[in-house]
Amino acid sequence: MRNISLIVKRVLKSAFVFAVLSVLTISATRAQDVVEGRKLFKENCSSCHQLGSNSIGPALTPMLKELDEAFAIKWIRNWKALVDAGDKQAIEASKYSPAEMPLFPRLTDVQIKNIIAYAKAGEPKKAAEAGAATETTPEGASTFSIAGIVGIILLSIFVLVILGRAVKMLERLILQKQGVVIVDDVKVPFGAGFKVLFKNKKFVGFVVLLLVISLGSFGWMGMWNTGVHTGYQPSQPIKFSHELHAGTNQIDCQYCHQGAFKSKNSTIPSMNVCMNCHKAVQATEKYDGQISPEIQKIYAALGYNPETQTYDKSKEKPVEWVRVHNLPDFAYFNHSQHVVVGEAAIRKEKGLKPNEPVCFACHGPVNTMEEIYQYSPLTMKWCINCHRNAELDVKGNAFYDKIIEAHDKIKKGEKITPAALGGLECGKCHY
Image 1 (cartoon, rainbow, N blue to C red):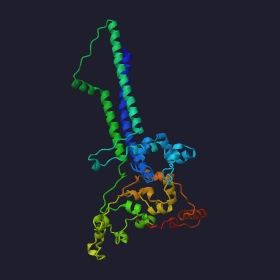
Image 2 (image 1 turned 90 degrees about the vertical axis):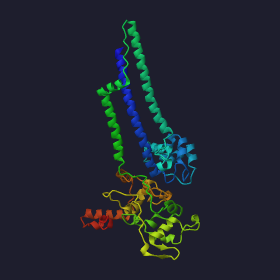
Image 3 (image 1 turned 180 degrees about the horizontal axis):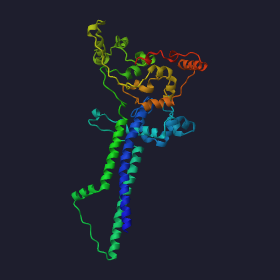
Image 4 (image 1 turned 180 degrees about the vertical axis):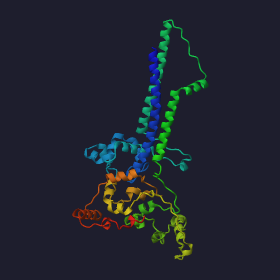
């Protein structure tokens, strides 16, 4: 019987260790799921869907709380296949919007579940809005599953404790029947027992192991996210609304960011570009007949007097815009090569619609952004995944025609120069 008691105690200790490690792992996994789901949502879904309100597509948070997760995964990956198979729920859902939803065959079940977890949890509230650094708690099937696992672990520990007490009582009864005098355990004060506990090398080792695992996990997560500024949204000196200009007024990206189509940098437009419209458009309706304060900032930067329509160069002062997208100095990125040469491949990979500019692939739905923010993580992994998956369309593309022509010359042993391979582009030398 003594052996049984020892076995139960060992099992109890193992179960306790397993429970603690499981809770830590599950907590970390749940947090990472929502974070990863937010990134995937911004990259794939936000151009058509919002969490709490209807847009081109329906609001995701209330819808996904009602839908079965298995159906939602199939729908997101390939809704057309469900409709073609005659699924009544899919056919009814497809009638929501005349715009067809892109297919996402490249997303795994885990990635789609991450998106669903984020959509159900909602966007974490900012401290300024909530009054404290609080975040919304994930709800729905994902949380239920996690709670179920934790509940099973705690129930197992409870059962083991009860079994341990039952075994101890049976031992006492058997020993009493055998005439053995049972000496009750001496009660040790809590403080003394605590000191004895910390003299136990196994317990101390276990505590140290837990600390190493916990601190290592937090350290790894911190280092992994160092330099990743997804969602970065600084305040600008002039509140320029992309939603108003690119969304409501449908001004093409190239009108302001001309460099994106012909140089390494997309360039920030000068105030003179703004004046092409705002010399006449002054937005006085909302300000009791006065010129909009933000437009007045443009005039002040140029030394422009709207009454006399003259410029005073002595009053000019540059606008100090805050950079949002900032790659490391060692990273080279050419906008024109992606926007012009790789446009077809990027559009196909990201599932962009014909009326959406290719800029949306990296910068997100800027036509819905009141203030611009960093939409994509811009990490090496993110870039490499696109380069691995995007299928190049080389037919009729002048860039690839030149490369093929150069390769043919190399095969024939003819003279080939760096200029034939794009070596005269300014961006090759001038960063």
